Every structure is written in structure tokens, then in C-alpha cells.
Amino acid sequence: MWTADEIARLCYEHYGNRLPKQGKPEPNREWTLLAAVVKIQPTAGQACDRSDGPVQVTKEVVSMGTGTKCIGQSKMRKSGDILNDSHAEVIARRSFQRYLLHQLHLAAALKEDSIFLPGSQRGLWKLRPDLLFVFFSSHTPCGDASIIPMLEFEDQPCCPVSRDWASNPSVETNDNLEAPEDKRKCEDPESPVTKKMRLEPRTPDGTAHRQSFGSQERGPNPPNVNSSHLTAEELATVTGMTPSGARVVDVYRTGAKCVPGGAGDSRKPGAAYHRVGLLRVKPGRGDRTCSMSCSDKLARWNVLGCQGALLMHFLEEPIYLSAVVIGKCPCSQEAMQRALFGRCQNVSALPEGFGVQEVKIQQSDLLFEQSRCAVQTKKADSPGRLVPCGAAISWSAVPEQPLDVTANGFPQGTTKKGVGRPQASALLGPFPSALHDLEYELKTGMLETLKILVQHSKRSESVTGRQALPLLQTPPR
Image (cartoon, rainbow, N blue to C red; front, side):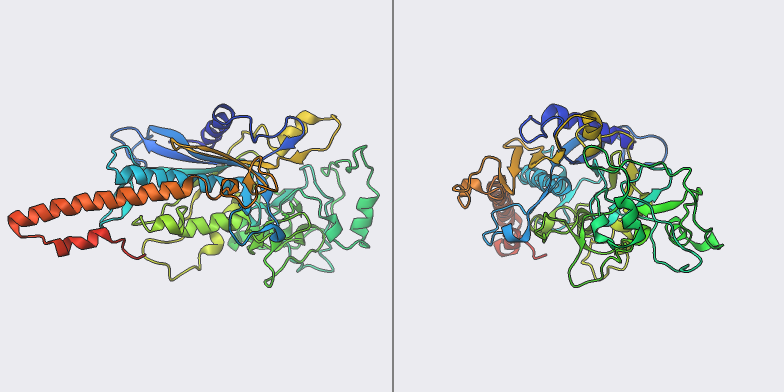
């Protein structure tokens, strides 16, 4: 029906052809992340879930977002007129909500090309059964999903640590590793490992030379373990080996911090640095943020849907993602499954229609051309520091004002004097007017329905005006 590479290619082409230069990274100096929602719709006469052969489908990008920034706690505003979280995944989901809002507007106006159909309850709508939505991200979501294994034959962002199995066979480790951020300062500065890293030869730009660990001296052999009842992740945790025999030497570190007041990371050197499955907040430059990591937000969307509480007032059932596709980057299938839905399996007492969705997870072999890795490769020995792009782009498949570019939580170009004015609010753009139009269309449509019912009641006396009044009310959710 579709492949991960097809989804990635479609999103990359959309980014290059449909988005203007405004808000994009400066060449050879900046990088950014990309996320999008793709609508999958079978051609006429076919269903997405048929099993009797391949299904011909159309794929359309309906929302897109870029961004790497998140404001710190001290910059949050009580007035709520600033975007706290501008990571690409969050921007793409916000743009997707705009798309859903527009589609509800079409449905209320009785337009046939809407993705929504009337629900079984009057005044509520539901998604067409033949539609699917695929979420794409050019990089592994920050937080728990990014704690993934680092194998001995890979280029290492930090020095691997050998485990002393004889003296400490029960050391807590994970098969999941993450962020290529330099976390050496968090480890014991007097430990032999840290001292060794300080002595590594440095390149002119101050970074350590990468090492090849294929010929590195191996530590003591791990104990024999009966692996028949262990998952690949648990096996690597106990033995330090993947099922293929590759040795897990460390983890990719995530910059996302554990939620204050809860369990925290062990911060032991090497693969035991992180604990997996914990809730985390996005990292900040000195100023701690209050925004949950993208892994945590995606997990929430897989339980509560992507539509949000506001749009749920108009819907009969939540809008769930069917699949998540990750671009070419360090990624672990098991870490993604754990972070996005595995740790949510014990969630219970949900309202009717809600549940934990085990989304399909795939990875593409196509690299985003403005990702950190791609820009670093192009930059090569060019002078100057590589930095994340400060702007965030929001694009939605809507006819009016589809594009929005923000920086530091405000529309790009906002001055200090302009902060606080309505035109400087990134949250007061198309949403209020769209909601007002939707409310008008819904009320107008209900009133027209009421008129028809009342006219019918005069002829057959089967429906009274009092019986039709509930049509004007939005059922509580």
C-alpha cells in the first residue's frame, strides 16, 4: 500500500517545493527537524484494510512542521499568547488540528469532499472509515524513544565503557540509547573513563577524534543467559549483546530531563546512564522547560487522539494515527514501541472510544537534507559553528493562511515592543476565526434541520419542535 521511503520522499518533496525560504535554515550554518502528517486514501472502490491484494492509494501531506526550539520556564506568559513548544512534531500536530478544523467546517457546510461523515449522535462527526493518517518525523522523537543502543562497530558520540561483569554482574543497563549530545560533564569527573576521554586527541574545532571500536579490546565475557524468555532489549540489558551478536557499548544520550519529583536517571558511565520508560521534559539552555518530550506527547496522542479536547466536542470518536515513519537516523524499533505505546499498556478507565493504539512503526533510508547529520556532512571543513535553526514553520492544507512562521514562540519579526499585541500572538492566528466559522456553520445547519423537522411535524405530527430542540445543543463529552 505504501512504504516508509515513499512517505519520506513525499514529505521531503513537499518541504522543498511547497514551503518558502522564509523560516528555513541558513545553508551550511543551520539545521532543523521536519515532521508531517500524511493522509492515505484508497482509490475508488478499495479499502485500506483489504487483505486480498495490494491496494492502490493516494498520499497527501495535510500538515507539516519544522523546528527545534522550546522556550524555558522563565519565558512562559500567563496570557498564553506564546508557543511554548516549537519542536517539529508538535508544530506538525498543531497544523494537523487546523486541517481537521477546516474539514469539520466543510462537513458542517455539507460539502462532499470533507473527510468527516455524520456520526450516530446528532451534532457529532466521525472520520471516513477508508482514511488513514501516517505521522512522519525526520528524526527519532526526543525523550524515551531516543534512548537506543549504540553498537561497537558504530561511530561513537562518546567513549564506550566496558562493564566489569565479574565484580558487578547485576549492573543496570539498557539496550536503548540516544541523543548524540555530549553528556560527559554529567559523569563523575574523577572517574577513569572521564579522565581517559579528556586525554583523547582533539581536532582543531575542539571535538574528539572518532575511534573505531571493531578492534577494541573486549572486556570480560558476559555470563551465560538463557535468552529464550527475554526480549531483544532485555537480552542486551543483561548480556550487553544484541541478538545478532553485536556488543552494546553505550547508549545515545537524550537531553530530555526526567520530570522533577519522579524517578531519575542513574547517570552511571556508559550504557547504564539512562533509565527507560520515564516521563521527561524537553531540555533548555540553562532554563528548564515545562514542555513534555516529543516521545511523551506522541504516547499521549496514541491514547487520547491527535484532535485535542476542543475539537473532541464536535467528534464522535478520537482521530488516531495509524503509523509512524522515522527518517534516516539512529533509531530502535523496540525503543519506539516502548516509548509510543508499550509503557501505556496499563492505562485504564478511559472513556468509550478511547484506547491505547499500537501504531505501526517503520523507518526510511532517506536522509532529510537539512538535518544535522546531512548539513554536517556538507559543511565538512568549512569554518563556523553549526547551530539549530531558530525559526519554526507551520503549514496546513487549508485555503486561507496555510503558512505560519514563528521564532521564540512569536510570529517571526515580532519586536519587543510588539509583544503583547494581538498581531504578535502566534496563538491568535487562524484558530479563533476558524472556530467561529465552524460554530456558525454548525448552528446554521442545525437550524435548517430544525426547520425541516418542524415542517414535517406539521404534516405528520410525528416530530414536535420540542423534540427537535436537542439538535441545537452540543452533547457533553
